[in-house]
Structure formats: C-alpha cells, structure tokens
Amino acid sequence: MRITHRNTVLSCWPGGETSSPQLPRSGSGTDCDRQPPAKRPFNRSCLTLWLCLVCLATGGGRAFARAPIAENVRLAINSGLKWLARQQRPDGHFPAAAQDRVAVTSLAVMAFLARGYTPISGPYSHVMNRAIDWVLSIQRHNGYFVTNGGTMYDHGIATVMLEECYGMVNHQRRKAIGRAVGRAVAFILAAQKNSRGIFAGGWRYQPQANDADISVTGWQLMALRGAGDCGAVIPASALRDGIAFVLRDAVPNGGFAYQPHGAAGRARTGTGIVALELLGKRNSPQAVSGGDYLLAHPLDPGMQFYFYAVYYCSQAANQLQGRYWRHIYPTIRRQLIQFQENDGSWTPRSGIEGQGGKVYATSMALLALCVPYNYLPLYQR
Image (cartoon, rainbow, N blue to C red; front, side):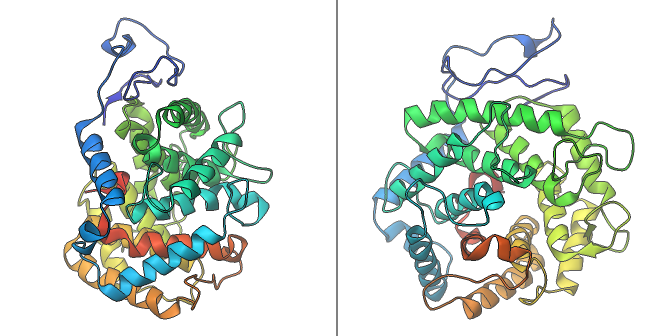
C-alpha cells in the first residue's frame, strides 16, 4: 500500500481514467504531488486475483471442489447464498431496518464475493450488480454512504464492499465506483478524530462526534486499507493515528475494549486483531494477546453481537493462523452449521442485531464460513 506523509490523498486508481476520483491535494514540491500516468496498470496481485475469480465463476465447480472446505459446509454456504439472493428487493437493496440498509446490502454483496462469485459472470452477477448500483445511488454529495438514520458503520462497510468489487465489474461501473470511493475516502479522513485525547485517530457513529470506538474505527481503517490496495495514496498520519487508537483499546491482560480503559469483549477483540494485522502490525503483542483472549473465551451463540463476532473472530483467527485458527474457526463453523435454518438462513438472537434482520445474520455467517476460500482481496494474508 502506498502512503504519503502529507495530510491529503492523491487518487491514482488502476486504469487511470480521466473520470477517476480526484481528491483534494495541498502542498507542493513533493513526488506525491505529481499526477499519475495517463494509463496505470492494475496492481499485479489484484489482477491475478481478478482473473482467478473470473475463471472460477465461469469454469463450473471443479476449481471450487479443491477448496479446503468440507462438503456439509459447502452445502450450507450454497444454501445460504440461494436464500440471500431471493431476499433482494427490485431496486437492488436487501431488507433491514431503514437506517441499516446500506450496511446490510453491502454485507450481502461481500458474502457472494467471499464464495468466489463476481459481478461480471455467474449465477448471482445480476443480484450483485443491482446491489452495487443501489449503494452507488444513495451516496450523498459530500461522499457519505447513508440513508436517513444511518451511521459511519454504513459508510465504512459500503466503501469496503465497493473497493472489493472495483476490479470485478465492467468499465462503466468501475468508473462510477472509482468516483464514489474517492469521495468516500475523503469523507472518512475528514471524520477522523484529530484531538490529542484518548479518542484521537478513531471514528464514531456520527462523523461530528467527539469520541470514538473500536468497532466503527475498524471499518474505516479497512476502507483506507482497501483504497490503498486499489491504488490510492493514503496519508501515513491517518493510518498511524488509527492504529494508535486501536492500540489504546488493548486491555493489559488480553483482548480489546470498545473504548480505551474499557473491558475486553470478543467481537471487539476480533476487530482489534484484524485492524492491526491488516495494517502492518503483524503478530504484535496486542494481537497475539487478543488471540489468547479468544481462545479462553469461545463464542456463545446466545451472546450479544454474536454474528458480528463470528465475522471478525473468524478473520482474526485466519490472520493469526496456528493454534488460533485450529481452535477458533472450527468452533464458529460448528455453531453456524448447527443453527442454520432449513431454508438456508440464520436468525439473529440479540435485540440490537435483530435490527439488521435475517439478511444481516446470514451475510455475516456466510462471510465467516467462507474465510478458508480466501477470495476477498482485503483479507488475504
């Protein structure tokens, strides 16, 4: 990921279309001020992934059969995706409470991506494209991805989804995504807390809030990382300050808290591990201590924010590998298979998660089960 030490972002998206996002720049006299070449090739690893996904989507099930996933898990995933596709509304969104539709629709798209399906081919391409177009259509002029009552959760998740799709859509959508993500990333940077207190470097539900939490911050950091993977130059200060906030959420005896000086929790610990691992702090003492916390506190299907936890903890175990993967993921997999409904869906058990509804729970469950496929570019080790 390319970064600059200036507090600005230079857009340099693969392909170099003249309509690609042009974010504000300031200062002069540095290499980062120079415009990118008129034609910038795809990042090689992104292009390789994209070609592999196209081959998988168009080549039948033979390539999928080699994936390290048991047959009963594969059938559970396929059943869940079929159910998910049937829930889409004619305008492209997926049902959830009105304020959560952006996030839930984006998570649904990511669930299809996680199984290796793409917007350019395969049985779910039309579903994915309608959802992508709907998300693009609700972006506000200031770059914010929300409907009425929405939060920075919606914004961060939508931005991550579009970045994951960037190299897997047709030319017209790629240009639209480039413009939209450019504005979205600028909005994220403007909303980052720049105070000197314990919340510095983080993000909160609303962009104007004075405090921050690890959950919202995790999605914004993933969005910045995804933008970098797509070719955007992200300011080093934004990443450094964001990582510093996550580290302040680390609990001395293991795990991560929702806010500094709070108690550790499983979902927030998964978030902290993933953020550190994907932003260059691999095998840090805080991440490893967080992994130990998850080993000592297995997920419980009756816990609050269970489906949020299965998503982040499965990704955290994948990043840490070793004994963390061997013990954490099988527990999550067994629980999800056990509690899947006959129609292929999952039902949220806690009141707050219930706002997202069955589409939310099913998307998160599928994202967790699909981790061994390793198809989502952002989370590849």
